[in-house]
Amino acid sequence: MSVTDRRLTRRGEATRARIVETAAGLIYAHGVARTNNEAVRSAAGVSGSQLSHYFPDKESLLRAVLRWRADAMMGLHQTPPQGPPDSIAALRSWADSNLTDETVRDGGCSFGSLAAEVMKSGLDLNDEIAGGFDRWKAQLREGLTAMRAAGVLRPDADLEHLAYVLMAAFQGGMLLSQGARDVTPLRNALYGAIAYVETFGNA
Amino acid sequence: MSVTDRRLTRRGEATRARIVETAAGLIYAHGVARTNNEAVRSAAGVSGSQLSHYFPDKESLLRAVLRWRADAMMGLHQTPPQGPPDSIAALRSWADSNLTDETVRDGGCSFGSLAAEVMKSGLDLNDEIAGGFDRWKAQLREGLTAMRAAGVLRPDADLEHLAYVLMAAFQGGMLLSQGARDVTPLRNALYGAIAYVETFGNA
Image 1: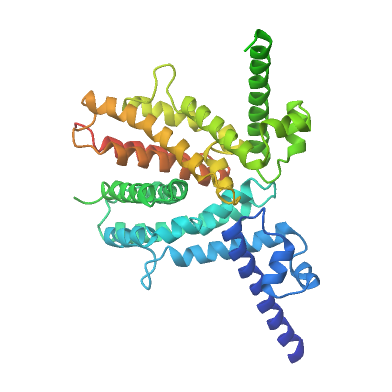
Image 2: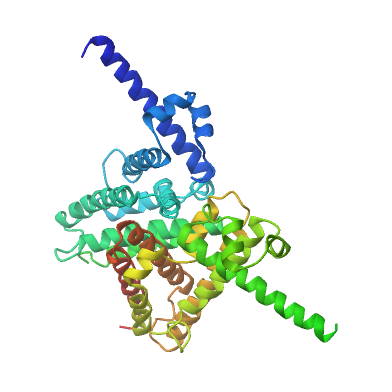
């Protein structure tokens, strides 16, 4: 591969990334159904042939957007810069950082709300959705494992179970809060889930 | 109003109900975006002018479908024929009755998954969504109130909090289970929420 080829490849990667990021933003704001190729093409500043070169159909673009959202979710659910929440205090910080009017108003969990819509789209993207949730679960388990190792949680605490409880509280609470346009349901869901995790603590 | 008028009114009500029920089924299976007027009209066996007589636009039809789904949800979340779950055992029965492969495969919570999609549709139906969730919360609170009155829960148990925890676990667990095509996340979410409710019990 020549130097010119490599440069084109890098430029191609940047174009592809710009398309994905632009589409992700439009879809978060307007939903999958109302985000068409023309809107993505125009907002990303690419031609129709460029768009179809990287993403020949809606499924391939949505797959890339789901992957990008899952990547972003991995960053969002950390307690920066320390990594996944690995103490009750860190779980509380994580909860509080999500209890904002903006998040509720703007569209909830950027990955979860997209997953909910894509599952109704008829496109076969369940592997991508399941993969994203699995990565999030692994991250939460990493923090819970540290808590168990540190003696915060008892040795018999079922970390897979607790990870599911936290994830469901987050996703369900976000849906209820979006519906109510109020963080109250999400706050109750997350605080309840964290209090439940505490019942597995070394009292 | 003559007898004939009354009959027509009743027939009109039946036609309207058939349209709503048909639309609800199509939307549950295919999503809002892929359910157009023609599909509803044809499946309900009504003319285009009949459809537009009862539902002049998509928003009015979706509003009626949300209301119908909320009504159905009130029935589903009871422990028939006794009413809302009013004991830990009844909560467990309620959870188990929802832990079916069919529910997960067919589209999750019929109200919650619709709410998630509608919130991305740009239509102003949040009042209907919030109203549906509020009715469900009131039903859960009714059962929790009975549990507190019976001494199953302590007098200081926050029933609003517990209702939110149960609802979020259900909605979030359903989303995760749909993504994974597996009831495991939902089972963990619901069992965790019920175990949390038990921590407010008179031990």
